[in-house]
Length: 304
Image 1 (tube, rainbow, N blue to C red):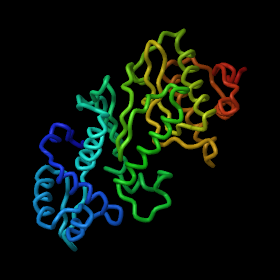
Image 2 (image 1 turned 180 degrees about the vertical axis):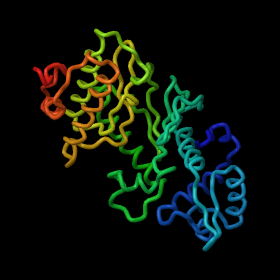
Image 3 (image 1 turned 30 degrees about the horizontal axis):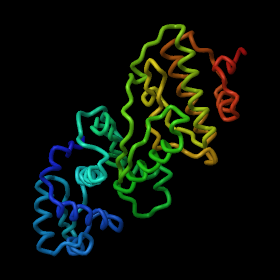
Image 4 (image 1 turned 135 degrees about the vertical axis):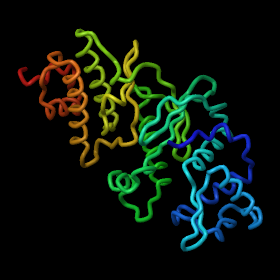
């Protein structure tokens, strides 16, 4: 797990951020940035670079390697610090609170602003970089791809989807975005995987989720990673989150992803509430969602 650097931000000085930003610039060209190039990237003197490198190494914001040459690379903590610094300069957030969720590909914290918000750091590539690199559309056309680039592009993709979908689709309201981090509305409710419904609620809630997927498709997006772990349920409805893998509806595999999403959601309800959800033709259901004809999952029952 990447540690929360927010409590350490007050100890960092402007020149520390210049150094971190300089290493970030150098990582566009190679994973490890040669020490001799850091003054140029950071606009600090070589003496200042030496001092700042020691400070940032002590705080575990950077890593150093000396196998072929003395080089430096950002750790996720260093990248987090840069994003937090930018959000603070923009007055987007006033402080970082407790974690709301820690996952394989993201960490989410509550943050304070004019009201409670959520800060999401993308972590794509942190533990399984090579696999992520092969699977993500936004890295497939680049020869030199770092985890930094992968995480930033994932955040850009998700933020772009949220901006396009909100408020017509029930997604978190996007507030700000920088590097690999997104600030968004904090969603109240419980994860679908932990929710429990009465028998008469099962199909209506499933229909509600599928209708939001249909609205998203109408606006040009397929989630492409739907499961019981990225839907929140509250007394006033549902919210679909985690959109970094979203694809445009004109993507060559969009219909395949839509069918998989629909199948995943329906399959979850069928497993958790056996006998309450009809067997459906997943291809027909996806086609109904895409054509704007979806009203209820019952219309796509294999016995219908």
